[in-house]
Amino acid sequence: MKQFIALIKKEFYHVIRDKRTLLILVGMPIVQILIFGFALTNEIKQSKIAAVDSSKDQMSQGLLKKIAANPYFDLVYPDLPNDQLEAAFRKGDIKLAVIFPTEFEKKLNTEKAITLQVIADGSDPNTATTLTTYLNAIIQDFSKTNLPRSANRSSDPSQPERQIQVAQKMLYNPQLDSAPQFVPGVMALVLMLICVLMTAVSIVKEKETGTMESLLVAPFKPIGIITAKAVPYFLLSLLNVVTILLLSVFVLHLPVAGSLLLLLAESMLFILTCLLLGILISIKTKSQQAAMLISLMGMLLPTILFSGFMFPIENMPVALQWISNLIPARWFYIIVKNIMIKGLGFVAIWKETCILCGITFVLLLISLKSFKVRLE
Image (cartoon, rainbow, N blue to C red; front, side):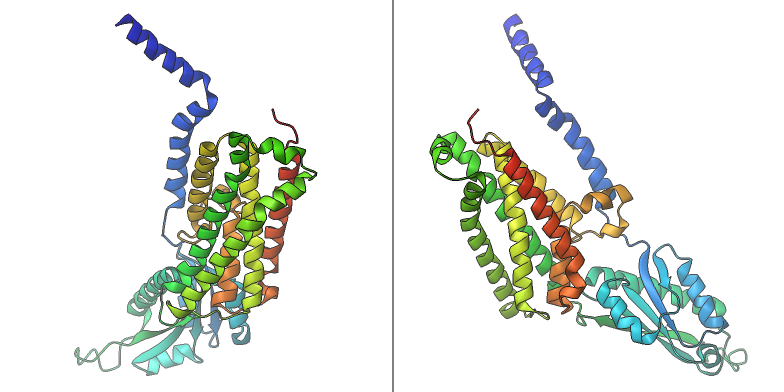
């Protein structure tokens, strides 16, 4: 029994002395609870919306004040010109717009029903549906408390009350299909996992099998070895991109609205970024098991949580929003949506492209600096 207790104590000492194991056992549950608690929410808050108010009367301004006071909306453009509405949607500045007809208050006093047009960005069907539901509830509540009754309703209660009807229009995705949302997200997720996972075990595999010596004595510089490791996976990943696009077009009936060449070029850039990230993991780790664990746990969760694919980034705490800026999949997801769904060109995605280029350059520098030409 004493020997068994001594063996247990020895294992406890091993765990306590191994900082990495202790960090996984104690730190990871805390981090995951905090991240999941703050990030995993489909609740919509402070969504940027605009108003096209051709009336500018007391009723229209009263309804806008009620909308602006709601925590779900952020009225960033209270009086946006109608000709600038589409550009605001294309840039992603707004997710929803309310269009008031001319002489809004006068029509409310003379007509039994008046129609407000509500336009939403349908490239994210879940968010668009939620926002229009919230807005419709606000409008109906405003109708009940502010609209005058029909002139003959007091004498005849069977007469209908005046009301504001909502006419909804979904840009980019009128049928609210789910494909426009999950195809860009799946592209980012698949490429991130495949590229990082495959290259993460490439160099560390050479270390474990003992063939790293032959690579180090070969007349190649580190950049040559890294490039040779990346090229096969680059071509295979590009084949995955083509396969996903073919399936989306011919099976899911989701055509590429923008430039196919631009989409392929941006996909190549993202593939290169992921390959360099995998190579950096392979250089830093000492076993294939560790490389695979870091690739799966370190890339899968951040891609799902912080890419904007499943959970709105703007609803997360500011600290998590800053962390999401470091996730390459976030920027690629925006690029694919803008090209594939909205049909935009390079002018609309130049910022995201520059960020991906910057991340790629930094990963390349760190990988070259970390690559050791001598075995330890």
